[in-house]
Image (cartoon, rainbow, N blue to C red; front, side, top):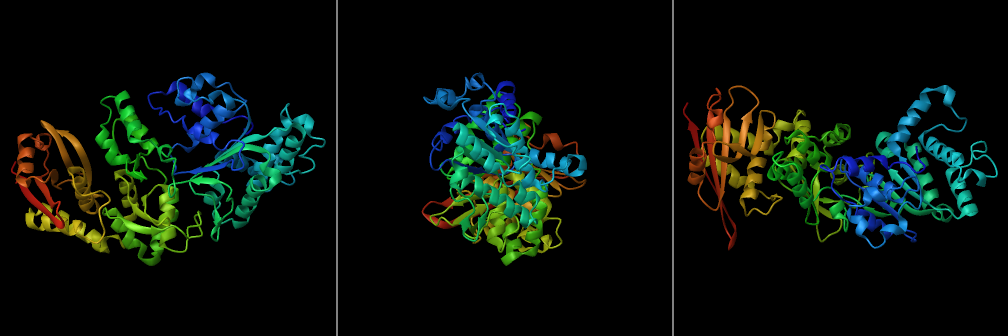
Length: 554
């Protein structure tokens, strides 16, 4: 379960699922810089379903003596590295998957016949299980003068005994290191016990000497107490501070282009970018890997976001409305960005004192993206893509306070003006959105950015009634945005955008290319919306929208 295991997931993916596999093996090269160094401790945390476990499994496959993985890596990037052979399958790896440990502990807790006198909680069980496997190993069993289980020796005692007798050091990989802080968020005694174990293993001189390399994965950065990290000897890379490993936090644009070329015709690159791109890590575009693979497999873009348990916890905090947090959340849903101070965030789910802490938590969980600023503590925060917008909005709009928000009211006014064919009102509202004190995430100087603004404007009023289709094949071309109603009698909205040109041209394109043809047999009314945006490069304050709206007679 722990000693020299954990590599099967990587083996199956790299050897048998190449159409979905993205070669990130050059990440192994980054770990060489830590190996057998004084600073040999690395923590790499990112949201759920962003490939944490696959990376951990890959590291185990590379370092572990429990397998011969040369063939698995033979065609991957790392095989070209001059030091590829140096560490390949040379180490005893302790691979600790905290989800598996918790599952085993739950079974242990329910069966009294399995109980061990001094194993009372998850931390005890983790140590017991690891010591048990070391004791059963032919390589180490003879080096224990006494039975460590009978004498209740701690894990650190067993590891130091092995090191002192054999000069053997371990690679330790712990997947989901923060599980105790997430699943036992109110058990502060267990959390303290766990962090004390990690301190003994990694911060004490006795414990640290037993490891050649330590790698932790999780969602949350390493827990902080006050302003100090509980394990400040770890190099930490997370969604708040990813540099210089941005390319390894998910799929890059190049990765997704390669996957799309492997599965030609499955889903367009533009659709994938709209739905799953948007995490801007120091100008590196990062996609949600699980969602991209799911969309390519299913042949459709939709929300695959399933981290509902964590959002239920966060929604409680949103409803507490720290410092006007609700206004900020709805502002983000409408496409704006806000600034957040990350200096007080203590990296857990319970020590949240203000809206900055909640927003930082949502960044770590993947609900928000963030952009660094010259002030290292301040981040520019935004909603990264349609998948997250869809997931968060569906959760938020269930609250009684949602429809009373000013931004929500503006979106409903925009929708009502559109179906009333009020061209001037629609253009005025888009001018209002664009000239608000909040600024758009994207530089507002091209058609893609205009598309984003339109989607944001309508999103709050259409989320529960429409499905927004971007770049949809229709008639003799590809329509920019089509809002397909989920309820009877609502109008179908066909939206065409032009940047720096003419709204009449947009309407004529809808007609010439017959975008409405596929909807003519439906009873719903059809409304054509042409939107243009004109700016003046010499005058930043000049931002003008034009709108033409027509209703098709059936």
